[in-house]
Amino acid sequence: MPLDPSPMTTVEAREHLARLEVSQQAFARIIRVNPSTFRRWLDPDSGIPMPRSVQLLLRLLSPTEARRLIKADEDSPA
Image 1 (spheres, rainbow, N blue to C red):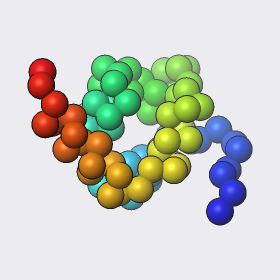
Image 2 (tube, helix red, strand yellow):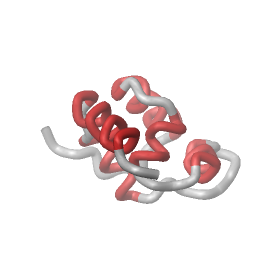
Image 3 (cartoon, rainbow, N blue to C red):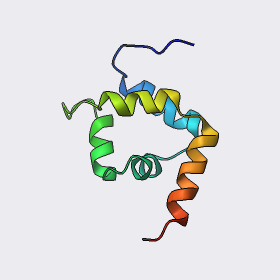
């Protein structure tokens, strides 16, 4: 399946989070950004675009891999 080259909308990003069954905060931990930064990326009024790499990850990541990454993060020493 080819990747959609267009910028991801806020609605699409939220749909991908729902598909992955992860919260904004959990996804922010996966990509190692502050949850408030991720929230700003999802706010269409912020004017701060979501990095393309994050958009690609949201599109490509499977729910299984998302859970594995979250578990690995929880299991790693603080």
